[in-house]
Image (cartoon, rainbow, N blue to C red):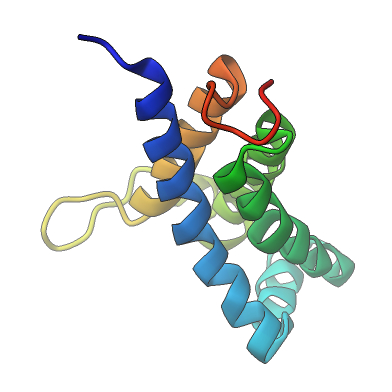
Length: 129
């Protein structure tokens, strides 16, 4: 028996809850660390405030299934900015000492976001898309 909608619910909950925890840290401590990473990468510091959208609002949208595709698009865009600013283009394939990618978590967020963008929220959602 296939239950794609249940799988999409688990995918949305996994992405939404895990990513929201990063946003919760920013609610408690601000985006100062993000600003310094962006400035070091040559990007404007005001972009740090988009972390509240992509790590607080978007994960909630994704988890509850309210405009999930839009939330996933926000996460996807933010993930690309993180790859560029934190890891740099020359380190995208850099490995840890146990042979995993250093950017592994970001790659998982990108893959999960693309899945939700391409499939929508499924039937277990506040607003199916």
